[in-house]
Image 1 (cartoon, rainbow, N blue to C red):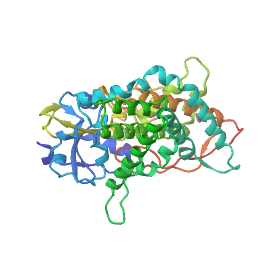
Image 2 (tube, rainbow, N blue to C red):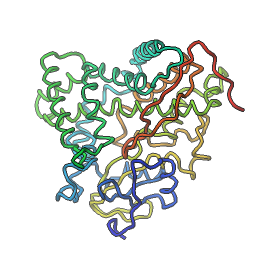
Image 3 (cartoon, rainbow, N blue to C red):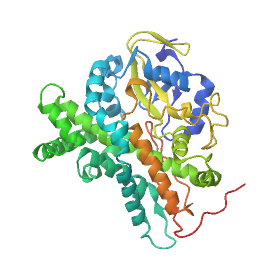
Image 4 (cartoon, helix red, strand yellow):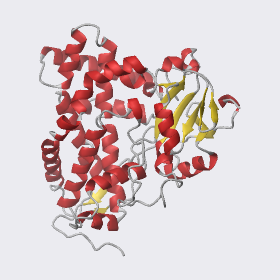
Length: 418
């Protein structure tokens, strides 16, 4: 049965992600779903199927292979349009993707990322110092004042741009991943996209006048040297690095911190000095499995008819992956809804993708999350939640709107529940 003839499972931004994952698992490994706006797609729900989707030679990220987009059935103001169409590497097929990725990959390999460790730790300490200025008994929003500024400052230093480059674009970025309905009844995505492109074009001109030893200058040089990068590719590559360089890390830090606050036994295990004790790296991996910062990975398209997990995917069909469902798969993870940093399968996730499109910034995001969590719970070991947080209402992202907590500076952690 073709995608358009199948009964579709509706993906709801407001739905509980864990419950949605359970319902998807009950329907199979590759499930026909409906995205907002009535857009049909297939979604992978387990690790093997997601890896197949990410690595299948007959699935491409190039949206020109999506007939519904090419013939205008997907409108320009569809709320997810900016995440599936563009000239950057995330929307490119093999040759263009390889060319664009090579221009930025050197900055995110192991050595340069590890070299950032002292600076990331320094920024974390500065932010934690600032948190300590709140009045006694006052809660602090850890997402707003710690998880958000840390990756923003890091990626802006990598790019050689001021922090205001993201601060000024913040609400426009938010509109792309958590669209809000305007009074007119439409989510004016086109306005947000146009504003972002204007701002980034202006930023590029500033950097062209004031070059430095940074990634933005290197990208501008690649553009000015000839045909290695078009104007639109330059803008969209910078856009991708900016948004991917902080948005998922914000959620990774916030989500994992929340999970640890709900699981004092896990926090106690991480503080254990025994050689066999779990590490903060283990906490990062389990956080990515349990509470992936990406909820649904959009979007690939079949370049010819192909079979995936026993399902016939027709040429032109869009395919996504539910990373929440992958991380909570009961066939791979025992008690998948438990947060356990000692779990043997904690690394069995695809929070940063898989294959050729594996996230370039994954190593940096993991390092930032590791340093942030260690610093936060070392500085404020008695940290407690001030209120239960609300989830972000988003298809592409899984996160929290805020994470309010009491710091209790100078106090010791409470005993872990037995």
